Amino acid sequence: MMYEATNSGYFCAQFSPQSPKHLSVLSDNDLQIFEYEDDDYKLMYVNRLGSKYDSIRCTEWSRDPSNPLTIAAGFGNGRVCLISYGDETDDQMSRVVTGNVVKEFNFRGSLKTKRRCNALAWSKNDPSLLACGYDWVQSRHTASQYSIVVWDVNKETKVHGAEYPVIEPYGNDANFHTSLPALGMTLDKGISKRNRAQVVKNEKHAIDKKDDSSSLIWLNDENNKLISGSNKGSLKICDLQSSSPIEINAHSKRINSIKLSPFNPYVIASCTEDEVKIFDTRKPKHALIQINHDIKDFEFSNFHSYILATIHNKTNSNHVKFWNISSAT
Image (cartoon, rainbow, N blue to C red; front, side):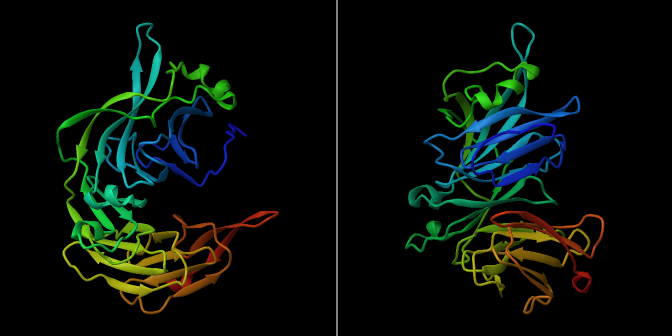
């Protein structure tokens, strides 16, 4: 074992697609960034949670090669921000790891209704487009009804100064003290940090699909199509140029995850807590394959078009299972 961190409620781990040596780990309490260096993983930085942001619900690393250490974070009160990590040198020429909020996206209908941001998805074809999935709230105000909003993260706007209490190196917890000296980090006192960030309020696209967006992906071969999963179990193929999503009655429970086959741009899979279904988006009426098991997460193989791996959490043991899905590919 190279490194072990102790915390409660870890539920999402992602390697940066542009900087694979960096790993983000999201828990109920914070967002931790790890760095692979000298054959070891070490804690690089932590985003603590503060009252302004409520809690981090979801994260996605940027796909822009020019911003390999930028991560998008969606919060329980509807805020979405971009956090950029980097290195600076202090007066003693020691390395100082920084983590700054560089942009914040305030969707008009989310802050008033305190709707959660549940899912984030970067476009693979255009890394400037970030899609956000929110809770849906029926309202007389059109802006409050949208549950998918697409932002242009390159949009420039005025810079505002504010305190961002989510930013701080993890220097106060004894569980992490051993990893910090090797990084030469300078630790700040307190949990607030002055930050100047751009606040973007005008979205590029907004979609009202009349239900919550619990999960979200872009179609590989399309710049204007997204697939959203809902709390009620439906999948919807949303075209940014159309107001009428195509609905797939996929599940009867909340859809926790949607993923695309790396080998077939038309094959997708979605999962709830107790099943995975695989669909062809050209003929989505019936599932190609259905796997009925308790499911924590799943992933398509990047090496074999006919392999799907699933993770199962049980009381006394965890299981990883591999499935032959050749009929779906």
